[in-house]
Length: 467
Image 1 (cartoon, helix red, strand yellow):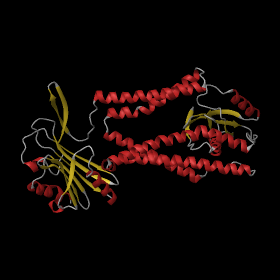
Image 2 (cartoon, rainbow, N blue to C red; image 1 turned 90 degrees about the vertical axis):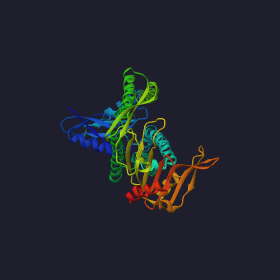
Image 3 (tube, one colour; image 1 turned 120 degrees about the vertical axis):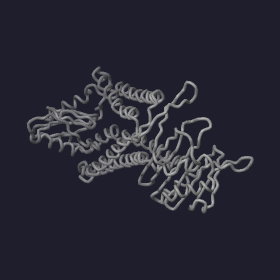
Image 4 (tube, rainbow, N blue to C red; image 1 turned 135 degrees about the vertical axis):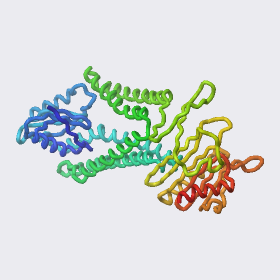
C-alpha cells in the first residue's frame, strides 16, 4: 500500500530539513520511494530507524534515461560507504542507511558548497530568473491595461487580483533569490574560516513560505471561482484544460523518450519543442472555437430571447433582460411603442471603486427608438476619484470629439462636462455627460442632449434617488 506526502521544498539548500523530515517519516513507517517536483511517494512499512543524506550531482537530470557513468560511480562509492541510493530528482540525489552511525557522505564543506551552488544555478536560479522575466512581462501588460482603461480596471476584482498575483510572485521570487545568494555568501565566508555550511532553514522563514503559499492559492482559488460564476462553461473548459494538457504532453514526452533511451540533450530539445508547439496549436484552437461556436455570455438573471434579422438570410439571437433601472428612455422621451428593449443592470465592487451600470438597449434596426446607458461610480479614495474623472473626460487623438465644461448649477455638481463635435453650423452636442459630485461620478450616454425638462427628470430620478 502506498501513500503520498507533499513536502514544501522552497529551495535546494533546505537539504538539512529534508533529511530530518525523511528520518521522521521513516520512524512513522513511511519510507521514501520516489520523488517529483511536488509529490513525494512513500511506501508504507514497519517503523524504521533510517538515516538520510541529501546530495547534489550536476549530471543529474529528469531527462536522463539512466544514470550517467559518473553518476553510477558516485552511487557505487556511496554503497561502499554504507549508503543505499533511494531516488533522485534533477540534481538532487537521496541516499539512506540503516547503520546507526553511518560515515559522513561528504566531508569537504567547500566542495559540497560549490557543488550545491553549481546545481542551484542550473535547477533553481535559472528557472527563477526565467519565471521573473515571464511574470514581469505579464505585470507590464496588466499595468498597461490599467493605464489604458483605469476605470474598468479599478472596478474589476479579477483585474486587481491578477495584478496582485503577478506583483506578489515577482516579490516572492526576488526574495527567494536574494535569500539564496545571502546564504551562499555567508556559507562561503564560514567555510573559508574553517567552519561548515550555514543552515538556511528556520521556522520563521518556513511560516513565511507557508503563509505566502496560502495567500497565493487563495488568490488563485478566488480567480477560479470568479471564472466559474461569470464565464460560460465552454470558455471555462478551454481554460481549465490547458494545464493538464501541457503537463501531459511535457512529462509524457519525457517519460516516453526516456523509455526509448534517448539522450538527455535530445530529450530536452524534443520535449520543450513539443510543449511550445502544443501551446501554439492550443491557442489557435481556442481562437477557432470562439469564432466557430460563439459561446454565449453567461448570466444568472432571467431573460427572453429574440431571433433578430440582421439582413436577409442572416439572423442573430439577442437576449432581452427586464431589470429595474432608475431612469428609462420612457421617462425621458415619453411613451415608446417598442417591445424589444433590454433593461439591464450590472454591479462591480472592489476595495477601490464601486460601479453600477444601467442600460436600455435594443437590436440594430432602421428608424430605431432611442437607447440609454449610464454608470454611477463611487470611489473609496480621493485619488481613485481623480483617476476616474481623468479617464472619463479623456479625449482620444484619433477622434474629433471635444469636451465642454458646464455650469455646475445645471446638475448641482462639483464639476460637469458635456461632449460635442465641431460642425460648420456650430457645436453638435452628443448627449454624453460626466457629472462629478462629492461622493460619486455619473457618466450618462444618451441619444441626444438633454432639454431643461429632461435635466429635471434626471435630477429627480437619478441624482436624488442615489443620495
